[in-house]
Every structure is written in C-alpha cells, then in structure tokens.
Length: 148
Image (cartoon, rainbow, N blue to C red):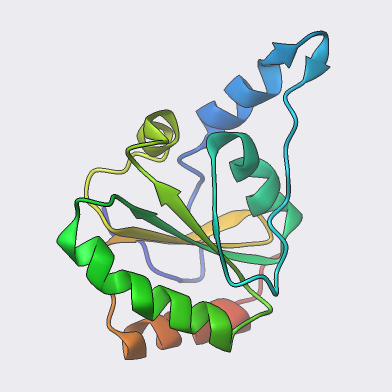
C-alpha cells in the first residue's frame, strides 16, 4: 500500500497498538515510554516507545528494516545522512525481527518501509528504498505540509 503526502492525512495503522499498549500494566503502573528527541541522529525504536515518539515530536520518519534485507542495508546510509542534515526531525528505525508485534500492527508487508508522521498523523507510508533525492523531497514536503 502506497500513501504519499496529500491534502488528506492517512489514518494510523497503529490504532490497535495504541489501545493495547495503553492497557498494559506493570505492577499497577503503565508501561514506561520514552520519547526519541530530535537532534539525536537515528534512533532505534521499540513498540513501547512508538506511540509516545510519534505523538511527542513534531515530525518523525521511521524506517522499518531487518538485518538480512539487502535493500534495507543499502537504504541505511541514505537515512542516516538525511538525519544528520535535518536535526529538527526525529529519525527512527524499527528492527522488524526484534519488533514483530509492532511490524504487524503497522501492517508492514515489505521492507524497507518508510513512514512519515507530522504532529502524530501518518502522512506517508511506502515500502522500498528511496534514493537520496527522493528522500530529500519527502522531507521537504513533510516540513511544508500543514497539519491541523
């Protein structure tokens, strides 16, 4: 399924994960969550961190990948370079082997898959490794897209 930045934000494929993680309790308290902060290059992201990261940051790009995936390994330097060029955006990576529940909740069927969120709304969801120019174009569209 391909979704691009348009006038209408795409719905979140992760609504079920949000409800599931919110319902989890550990010793009477909610499962701890952490926010990946912008200006910190590329970060690994887990299911426990996912929703807080997406909703707690203005712009988030997430690369779903696996170590055995050749296109994923080829895309990694492009993603890393973009993260260094745009410290105002959170760049996160989800290892689909380690985070199978998260990958399933996100309906990841092919890797690499890139998702872009702005103010918590999923605006872009596309499998395939983007070349540097296409990723830069996506970043510029994400920055200029107005979300209510």
